[in-house]
Length: 174
Image (tube, helix red, strand yellow):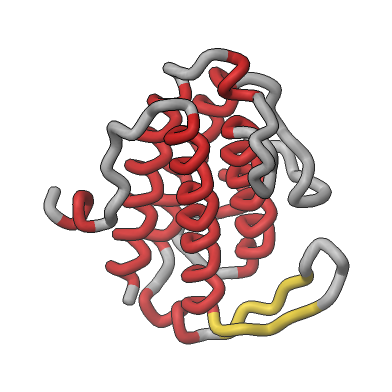
């Protein structure tokens, strides 16, 4: 099971690099224009993914691992909600995303295989407590990125950029 999450971490890192690279080619107007997507613009969509990842990673700090997640997270702001944007520009978003993706990969690789079947108890941003299987919650964590990157590819297409490949199989074939 662990190898599947390592694959998802690698895929998410690869996709984030690809799409942020495409975002660098957008004009400021295309980057920040509210296109009526869930989070408005291409920039704010990717910013939300970053914020969401940090919210979830802070919930994962109780998961035993060789890499101390608290130590990794000390380098990042702790978002109070999933609607807060932690960065103001694309260069900052790209830098923080690259660093966080490296940290996610290191952390996932350090989780003992036996932990994936254990429960994780956490609170959502509204304060409600949940206890769910760690593997299921990690699957949600990675799927959240995939979901919003799908929205981002639509926004890129609306700006005339269709020159990217987003399928997981590309990473599997590497």
